[in-house]
Amino acid sequence: MKSRSGILIVMIALMAGGCGAPKVTTSYRNMAQQAVAEGNFEAATENWRLYFEQQLLDGNEVPPAYYAEAAKMATQANQSELALNWLEQAQSLNYADSDMYLNLAALYEQKKNLSKELDALEFYQANYPDQPELKKVNARLFEIYSQINEREKALALWPSLRMEDRQQEKYLDPYFSIQKKLKNEAVCDSVAEEILALNPKNVAALEWMGIKYYNQAENRYQSEMKKYQENHTRVQHIKLTQALKTVTADFQKSLSYFKPLWEMDQNSRYAAYLVNIYTRFEDPKSANLYRKYLE
Image (cartoon, rainbow, N blue to C red):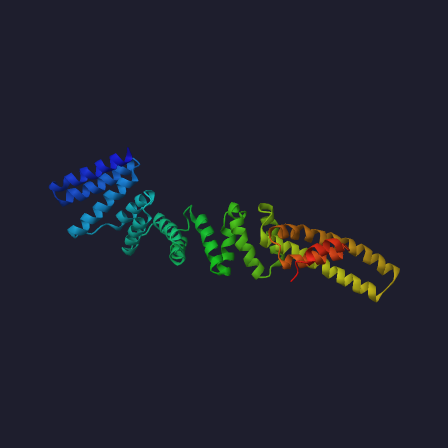
């Protein structure tokens, strides 16, 4: 039904040609608005195209707001190239509204034009700070800043993201990556745990936690053994025995992260950790299972 209606709307507009150009172009625009009311965005888009074409032929200026309005219809009609062309026309004529820049950003994202998408989003952020869509804009800006290594800008935006965004893996991942580069270990510990609660197979978070507990256990093991070797007293032996309980617990925690990593990827790096952990457990049989994967 929509396609027949669209053809009829366009035909009516074309038949108005004998009544003079002003009436024709007015009809095209009116027909576009009527098509929108009927939910026929394809017909609306075609009538806007005819309107702009006729105005160009007649040497008339088109109000830039019309281009922005028409672009919304083209977007609804899945004609993204046409929508982008009309939005850029409106922009070149110094027209601006919040919806226009949201639509521009979305279309540039579709085209994977990151620099122009960034320009559109930053313009929106700077000029429409009170709009309800700002939180979504900030979330996308955070993703882009993380991607292009603008760490300071990304971190500055993090507190302004909605709580539901800050609890999603797609945002936690880049935030975690930034904090690792900044060597903020306490933050990384917390974020890695959040990520693993959402996705127990997240490689970066598993590696972080596995290595954290491995190093914690190994460092304490080496420290306590050195103390005992330097002082073979009964008291020092008791201290060593107590410390080794904590060491064993930390190695167990480390193992709980390296096991799923190994299941996903049998590489020599993970094998090295597993060999060392089982060696500390005095379990040569298990250690040898992984030793053959060492390069």
